[in-house]
Image (tube, rainbow, N blue to C red; front, side, top):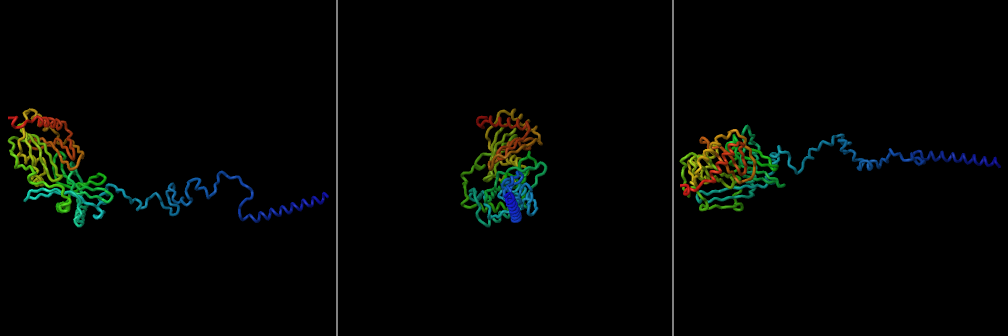
Length: 407
């Protein structure tokens, strides 16, 4: 019996070994173990490793910014495509002018203002608004771009450009950026008023560019602007002859004594205006108004604005307004003015537009010297003598009495 049991056990063992061999041969190609394996913490399923570590699709590895390269092309992805810099923002300041020139005139809006005076009727009309005639806009833009390309001005030494309040052309882009072309004066020394007329271009980012245009281009542009804006739709003001206070309605005299101080109010916006007051070395106070004279025409042939004002005071005449009795204070004021350093620092600060300038001059040895200027551009002379002279002058003017009371 024991022998039979041993034979049965041996047969079962042989059959078991044969089954294991067959199972191994059938599953070898699948490379899958039948024995459960403990997960290795250093291994993760390839289908899930990108989700676990980078939360991106495995294919996005070609654009991995940390690598700096495209995995397919090997190119440096940190170098931007040339077209990728194109957006709605302004390019750097050095190319602002180029950007403007590349514009189509049909994509811009043109605004200007002008003054018209009829000699026969003495009627003065003021215009302001948009220029809408297509061919006029085309010619304006061509002339304007020619000036920008050919006549940019580089300042040298003590040269400075003053003004910028008299805007003659405003260009608006479709995205509401504005370029303003203004008139200014190129001065060789900040201590002097006046100079050669030049153009100032104010760019959208408040940068300033200067241009000295050819006289022919300048006349062409300003003529086109004036003719383009002078339409009935743009008429904003009409001044009749009886509304104007002309010099011949006043009794004018020519000062018998040298002028000591001048206070000059000038404005080139909305036409030309020039008036003010002055005091001579004897304490006589006068007023003047040269707005309706040929001053503006003669100014083009003069290198000094303030010297021409002084010449007009003596040539055209002034109106007597009063007298100051404190001649000692007047002499002290002139004494301080004579000590102002001609090389004193002058700082400028843009304040307003189209307001004009109020400037105080002392006249030393027949030559006007600027002490202070306020208005569109505030100018400060950094010299204590200038400040003292201004204080004495203003005190003298406030204490002046009318002619009848002073006699």
